[in-house]
Length: 407
Image 1 (cartoon, rainbow, N blue to C red):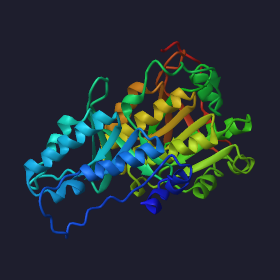
Image 2: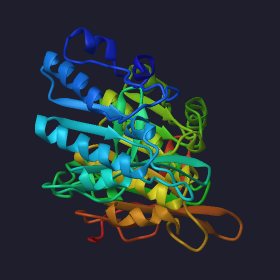
Image 3: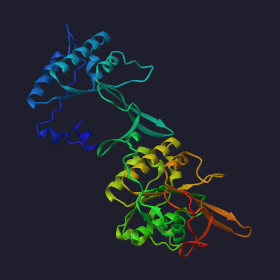
């Protein structure tokens, strides 16, 4: 147990050396023959003596079902549970008990009564959906306290246990977007009446090849040149490929990487579940402390398991960025006949502050590109279809763009 605990960041040996923690293997040899009456009184006496020596008020018993399996009769097990419950209350101990719960057709006879005696019941579950394993935690009851009864995902990592509830997000907790930040594209700055708002959530949607990555790379390079830090999260390409592909439109990201102002977070969506992906990305944000986060592309998040998993991942990430005043600039792969993806990623459109759609225009003898600002909260943005092309010097708008008073 000591060795296993080290893998999740808990050094039990060090705790024992402080004199505030004691581990005892209280296993009962089930091969012994029982004669006469048998109960757990002797076990409780040993626990009480050790608790008195440590001046401990907290006891953990793992696992209750194994302890009581020496009693073959369900009535005997219930009797011992009542005995344990009475003893804990008389001694004034706080006690954490664990027990296994078996799905049907296996029975849990004799242990269900523990749920009624306990003041707080927490249920842990591991399920697999679309080949993705997810751990869930749910507070079933908690006497004398308010609690959230919904299921929440949680992780067991090398730093311990991390619960990641969507319901922990407080809408009143994050401030409004800050001042304007240049997009790195003069025509887009004009169309947005000054650029993106610092701390806002921005989505750029379009077909493959419309220039979505070039738009966000322009923003990343501009911010790094201004001395700000950018975290570039990619779910589809490795960082060397991104840096190399941006050389053609005249965007050199390598100096920003070498200066330490630009860092990449590369993750294959299928490699981990949405909770692990979110935890890893939030850890990178906490360590790097970026001013801005760019994500290419959120449509790949659906490959983490399901549309629901992608939605939960994005909602928690976006609100985490809003609370930290980190600009979150995302790209999304457009589906046919829709300005935005008609999937779970479209569901986050209501929490995005700015939405931009990129499209191809067939002129007959060649193909042009156009940009439309769908919405941009708090700005007098352009309402025109703005034509642009990708040149050797970045993105160039083909006519002078002015704000049009849209909100």
